[in-house]
Length: 337
Image (cartoon, rainbow, N blue to C red; front, side):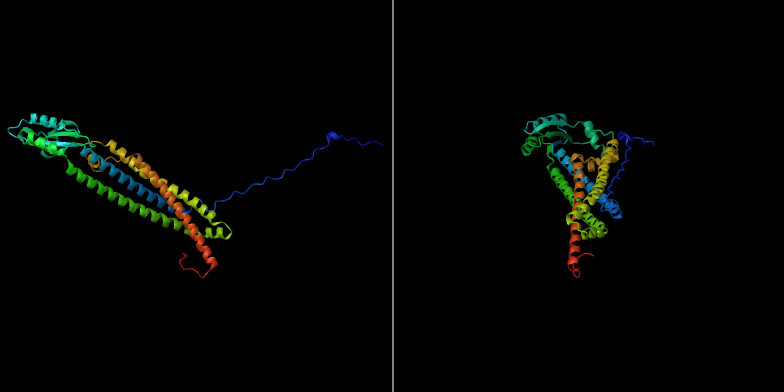
């Protein structure tokens, strides 16, 4: 009788272990669709209003800086005008008038406008090749003054009148007063336009946001019925509309900044041309500066926060209306359908 082969316990067959399938969490979809027709339309509206608001803000800033530059340039100088006379040595009188003006405290320097410069000033009206000796053209002396400590103009005028009867002093106060009034009026008009644009932007953003939320009212109702807290629902909508408003306001603000940068670049490339000279004289340089770009960025943030705040208030109002209807279905007064 044969014995069965002995089994080696060390070489026992290994049991195959079955691995349990790894559990995977199904990715959750956002409560609100990342993009829909309401969100796209709202983004376009916000972009347009942001562009108009930033454009108006930059224009007001540009006009204000230009007006300040005009006022500063005129108030830095006074002009002494000497009329020609048969018994007057014009060159000697110009030097005497300049030296008399520089004796007053508050004056910095004096410059005599020579015949060539005077001819260039009259060239647009009298044409080129003008001979001043044939015409009784007054000569000018330009005195630079200290704006913070101007001289005594009345005393200077009286001394010039006693020394040189043909000399008259123009301190530009009349022009400065008119320019200041015009500058203030222009800035006030620009500020009023800016306020109107911002008001239109606020109303447009509010109604566009409420319109976009009205299309998602059923989502608010479902979330509220399944027990979601009002703050949770409002936060989800708030995040959604914050992304939309940031994109829209960033696009509009970037377009406005690009417009000013392009206009400034074009102006720098077309200097000494009649069109650019006229535009520069009227509007100044098309550069809003650091403060202007900071204002454009601040406008973008304000628009985004405004849209987000409007979305939150609208969601809370919608939940309040739902609760009101659930508690009393017959009460529909003052509640939007």
